[in-house]
Length: 302
Image 1 (tube, one colour):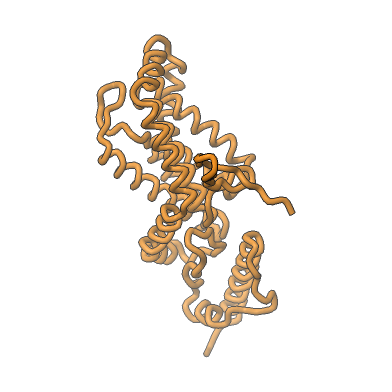
Image 2 (tube, helix red, strand yellow):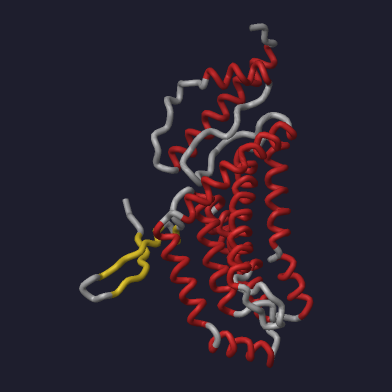
């Protein structure tokens, strides 16, 4: 095989960065890292001959893989588009086959039903008497909470990561796309199935798409960048939910379930496991002797 020295150096550098990023990712998730001295020679040969990195490696369902973009922008985009159906299916399956997630969504669904119609009407009357936000701020949070805004931000993360060959930024962009797509599809399906009206009389009320998308975006960023980024974004999502109520775009029950849905999808897709709160897992429990059931927060200290 006739390979130029510059191409060989670039291929070795790509292989080394990929190996290190994967080792860091596996260690962070409690997995056994590969031999630090080992190279992936089949991939290295492919890099030298084709000039591109291999596609997203196989990992656990919903796992945030630490991979690099596939060489040029068009090669990266076309490769990710081919892999998108498989990755979306894996992420959706990981989200909606997890028992804890189903319990959380079931509890949130039950709560939203219990809020209809008395609590919803009381809160609606409150906002009818007095607006919580000035109109200008309502417009701002309405735009910030629009799912289109979140997809645009995901696209920006993806493009920056792909163009700069930044593995983490690139993966965050892909993860945001996956989580937002799954969240949006489920939200739209539930709206069509429930077919409820909002306070201003328009259809397709439950659940709130602005709220679910805002919380989903915040959950992914929280999982990836930690609470210093996640908590302020949850605050923004809360203001989006308030704007939906204040502008008579949704009932309180709509935003309750929308928030739960976005949180479950965002955290699960970004982390590859059931959602966590401050490092502890939310688990279902049942006490047959007392005839009770619910959720419990469990954190393991080492």
